[in-house]
Each structure stands twice: as C-alpha cells, then as structure tokens.
Amino acid sequence: MNEKNFTPEAQMPQEIKEGESKIEKLSINDFAREIGLQPDQQGRITFGPEHDRLAYEYAEKFARDEKAEGIVIDGVASPGVIASLLHGVHPAEGYFTYMSKDAEGEMTKGETKVLEPLPEGEGRGPEGFTWVKKETEDYTLVEFNLAGDFKVEDLDKVIPPDVDPSKPVLISGRGPLYLTHTIAAGYRHYKNIPGVGFYQPASKFGPAKTEIGISHEEELPLGLNFGEPSEIGTAKEQHEKQITDGLSGIKEGIEGQKVTSVEVNGKVIKIILDSGETYSVFVREVSKGE
Image (cartoon, rainbow, N blue to C red; front, side, top):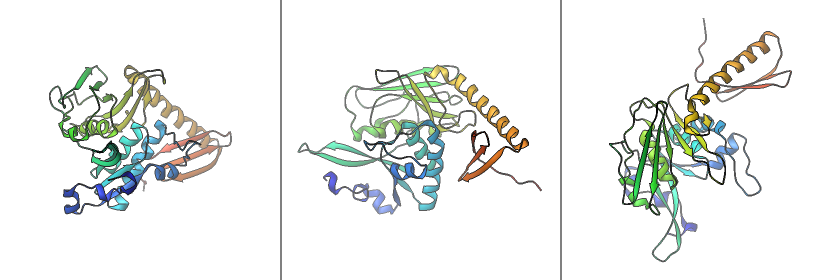
C-alpha cells in the first residue's frame, strides 16, 4: 500500500478488526495546539520536559472521552512526551506508524503495536541485538544495541533484562520509536518500579540528556531532567527545593495580598503576583474541609 492511500484503519491487524476494538488517532499537532505550542518555520514543534505531565493528562482525557481501546500516535515528539502519552492512555493499546520499502523498493507506510514484554534474565532479542545493563545505587541503565536495521517483524523477540524494581530504569539506544517504547512499556508496570526515563549520551549534536517519561512516584516526577544518569540524585534534590521555594513565594504573595490573578486550566493553577512573578501549580488531588 502506497503512503498516499494509507489510513490507520486500513493497516489494523485482522484480530483488531474482528474484535471491533475502537482505535483512535492521537495527533501530536493537536496536543501541541492544546498546550499553546506552534510549529516553527520548518514545521517542527519543540517539546520540553515541562510538557511530559501535560502529555500524560491530555492522553488520559483523550482515551476516556473517546472510549478508545487503542491509539495511533500520529506525529513526532520527544521520547518523554511520547512515553507520557502512551502511559496516559493505558490500558488502551498504543500503535506507531513506520516507513519501510516494499518488494519493488517503494516506500510504504505501515503500523505496529507497542508491546509490553515482561523483563527476564539478561534479556533477549533477534540476531545482532544486544543488551548492556548497569546497576547503580540510584538507577539502572539499560542500553540496547543493533547490529543493523531493525525489522518490525522481530519486535516480539525483544525481551528486556530483569532489573531491581526499587530503582528507576533509564533506557538508552538508537532504534525505531516502536522499539524504544516497547522496551519502556516492558518496565512501565514492572513490580511497582518507580519510573522509566530516556538517556541520550553526549555527542556532536549536544550534551548528555536524561528525562523521566513514566513516573509512579512523586519524588521522581514526569519531566524530571538532567544530564548524565549519575546526576539523578541531585536533580531530585533540586526538584524538591524548587517546590519548597515556590510554595514559600506563593505563601508570601497571598499573605502580602500581592496576587494579581489566579487562572485555572485543567489541573494547572497559574498564580501571578504584582511583581510579575508567575507560579504554576500542578494539582493531583483537592480536598475540601468542612
């Protein structure tokens, strides 16, 4: 099937059609517009770590409102944003589109499901696929390496290595999105693991980057970002300090009657002081006293 004739429905596996699962397209561009981001002159949208939580909440609401049993990720975003979208729609299944060459050498567009393989032993994979696991006191770094191009039909052969579930897992490796996020999904709900992040080593394109894209712990929030994996402890401390300092600033503003406006957008409260300082509070729960 040529790309111009592609539709998500046309590429659904046969068992999905028979089961009549409701598959919806989740547009990255729609999400960007929802949070006020616009593409640049080249049509690219730049997402930051601060958008991960917004992605999770957007996807959670999207799946609930659409009663979706599966979503097709349509568009390009950072690994953290995509992981947060997939986590937000869970237990709805996730799908990615991908490009490949047909027998005649023409590029065609296909689709595959994000799997959720159970980690086991030292991990397994197709021929030429290898794992490197590094355990530390604060995290586990799991790196995958490919000997050549990865084939989508080999995705079900990928089994991530077992890890200590008391620490977050940081994933590193270069491969197609459906591969990276299948590995992440394997750890997503693994034995109450606190979170999953993505590590990009330093290169000629920029410094090292690590970002948490799946979180089950308040002290390891979505979007927590730092350089090398070894900086995770410092990043968590800085995050706690930022919360403490922010709450102190809000408290002083309220007590000094310096609040000029309060805006509520979804689960985010934006507080602006007369000095121009702006605070954004992300709310997970609200209780009302008697």
